[in-house]
Length: 240
Image (cartoon, rainbow, N blue to C red):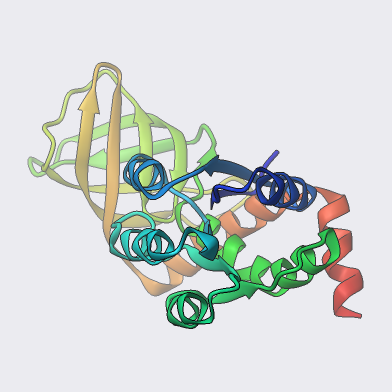
């Protein structure tokens, strides 16, 4: 299972192949394209944990990084540049990138740069990670009616629920649930953010710091369980 998704933009097939292999070795799934227009479309349609741009694309590389930074869903992704022989382009894009891969490239040099950035990629993944789980949930709507339903998945920002009860999008509710193997119920003031036959989406608006921390720790544990052992081993050995 991939623990992250990276947008890889380069017009060089060899560079794409090198990075695709290196990313897969770290359980990061690459989505490759060759130009700024294709990259812009993908940035609008998908959520990425990392954006890697070949600075040999010249002015296009800066445009791609700018689009990523302005994208509501991708502005917090880890940003990488792949160095170019044009010192001016590389210097400009270094300011827009958190990390730079230096040419000449090799599997070792790519992984050497990826390793210190891996924590950022995981944190980005954790921000929107949804864990599939079926637990009882109680919704209390504005009329104080209690609706009992079952979760489909949960993230740090909300729940997807299975229920035949219809509630309008935008309605403010309170949701209460208990995480598996936990004793204390979590309570969150929430908003119905989408509704379709048999399902509701709930976005948390207000939750206590204690309950938020409990949820984040639980989700982090579930996410880390998806990290392949061969990847975890690479980073444990690097830290020693």
